[in-house]
Image 1 (cartoon, helix red, strand yellow):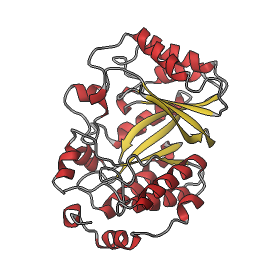
Image 2: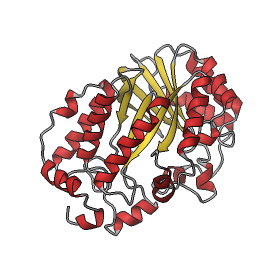
Image 3: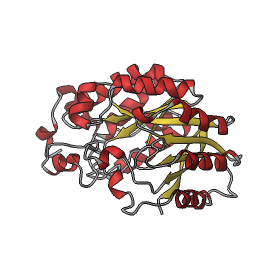
Amino acid sequence: MTYWTSEDNVAGKPGTALFIILPTIGCYRFRIGKACYMCAYPASAPEVRWSQEAIVDYFREALKKIEGKKGPFAVRIFTSGSFLDNGELKPETRRKIFEILSKMDSVEEIVIESRSELVRYDAVKELAELIPDKHFEVAIGLETANDDITEVSINKGNTFSDFVKAADVTHKAGARVKTYLLLKPVFLSERDGIRDAKESIIRAEPYTDTFSINITDIQKGTPYEGLWERGEYRPPWLWSAVELLIWAKKKFPGKRILSDPVGAGSPRGPHNCLSDYDKAIGRAIKKFSATQDLSYIENLRPECRGRWEYIVENGLLDWQLVTW
């Protein structure tokens, strides 16, 4: 079953998030051979198309995980594609899902994902009107505000101006915007990865209610995996994520700054020196995300930090760090 719960930030306060991956056919760009270079999620989409009724039934089943439990809850809905893609979910299916959620008082936050070009005013407005008293966000994968990096390192197929248009439509339709940013796409040094993320936050801030920092991990079958296997790419240091999160929260204290360090402390995930303390840093980042309390990540033991500082200060590239 592809649904689970985790401690998280719910509409600005600590709570529990229920993550649900709906069994749709997945991202249309993956299906036409233009997938993002780092993403393998659509590869796990069902080979046999589910009926829309079966998808709704699956959603109801997933909600049982929080039934009768104490909130507040956020429900974060994924499709390995775009919730607003009519090829994945019909409008009536989206309505049914939101009508179900509208009756659940313990659910205070709802998040859906969509690519920029699929964000449409009528579609977002219809959903927002079904849940007027809930915190509703449309999560958009900007990844970076630098169009050159978008094209060369990610293959996103969107530009920053596309994101701005989608964010504007979302706000006008009555929903909030969550912006996904990717920390350290391939072909960037650790220093340049941090710099790109900071510059992207500054540019996207006027259009964003919540930032979600996705710290790059290595997913199977992707071009990123090939570069990683050849020693030409290293996932970000956890210290890079910590620096970015502290900087972002201090610079924009009114924004929610979230991050879930998938695979923290493993070779395929963000890591420092692959010690047990890496996992402790990963847990601290999740605590910060849930509470927005910087003390969880400001007072970490500086294990391996000297190595990281040397790499960042000298702008070393990944292929120079095969032994690090």
